[in-house]
Length: 261
Image (cartoon, rainbow, N blue to C red):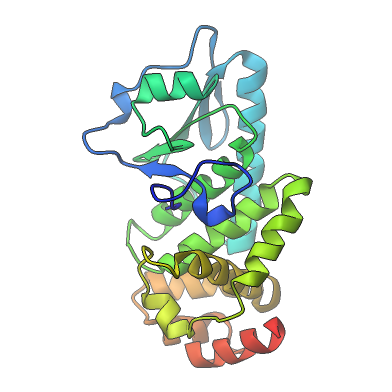
């Protein structure tokens, strides 16, 4: 879940401040009006996109499918199959989005159930990558509210890959800045965002996830998630996923710190 209510909606903000409102009180997907005029529906293998105009619907569909393939590869979830199509509704602009969803003015998107509601703009690619990550993670884990740090870290990692080239140096600088005073990983895993450490927590979570994906290996990430899904504690899940690298969270922290430094 991307942090938003306490932070602004500028697309140049770092990933942890991407403004997404999750399940606003009293909202259901069927209450929201479709984009229009000129509504087009574009089904694909995993998504059903609604947007203004056939070309835009097709473009968003391609973007979402590319995100899906990259996320599945990074998490090693090659055998995962979604239970159905994920709806993605893209409004023409912020005004239409706010008017038809009743979303908070600060928000850049709404996630309701397994659907994403957002609008055309420079932040669209990042919004989709971040939120599709959450949809896949939530369904794969069976709705368990566990591994929040990994869930958010992977979403930020995927969002950074989807960012425009001009945004990447700023995002990398933000990520590096969050490493100056890192949390112990046991504290990182237990932390609930909401205080002054939240920004650094998102950055560090993304850094640890990037280390696991790129150094630990994608097949290891799959085994790690399988173990956690099966009820293993964090030490056991780390050992199951990355036996040649580390056998506990403390060992992971040692290796990550060595690479970070």
